[in-house]
Length: 136
Image (cartoon, rainbow, N blue to C red; front, side, top):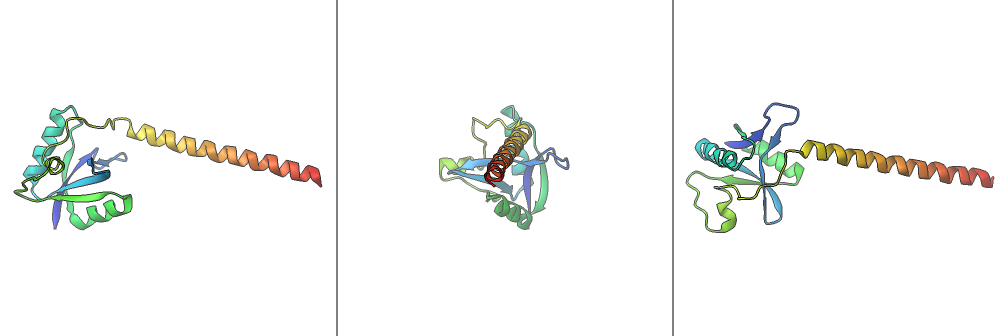
């Protein structure tokens, strides 16, 4: 089965997929109907969010991606009618969005912090090695 997802910078090295935080889980929306996906993308743009592109992809591929990334895949079926406030977010994005314009820079900073921690551990090991050699 083919579904429609919202991608940012589709086909680029920094490609990203639109997701929501629902009940403490990151959820990726899969739209059964391309018109629903286009409407949702337009609502995001109206909220000054970057305009995503709607891409058709196999449902299994998205579900595999979500499983590997620790995300939840949520299917928005044609004619879907929400029953709860949370389900309304499947048809219209929340009014407040997380700023993700710097997500690549944050990933880079996190990577640099990890490298710095590794260097500190390495220098600590060198110090211990020198002390042990001094004892001999």
